[in-house]
Image (cartoon, rainbow, N blue to C red; front, side, top):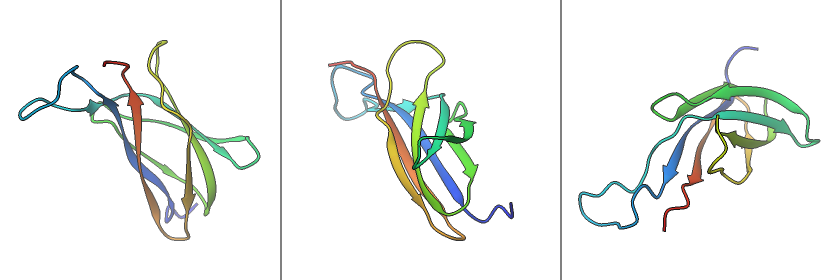
Length: 101
C-alpha cells in the first residue's frame, strides 16, 4: 500500500474526575487495542493507541467500524463508523466512558 490513506486519531478516557471546573482535567489519553472492521464485519486491521492515546492505520478508501478494546475488563467505547477517502487520513477521536459520575 502506498500509505496515502487511512485513519489517524486518539483514544481518550473521560471523565477522569467526578467534578469539572477550571484547572481540573476532563479527560486523559488512553491506551487500547483498536480493531478495524469492514462493512461486512471482517477484521481488516488492528493497531494500538500509545501512551499519548494516538494511533494511525493505513487503509484503502472505504467505510470501517472501529472497536477500542482495553487490555483489561473495564470501560469501553461504543463502535465508531469512519469513512476513509482516497489520499486522506480520517481524523477520529474515540471516547471511552470511565463510568465516573
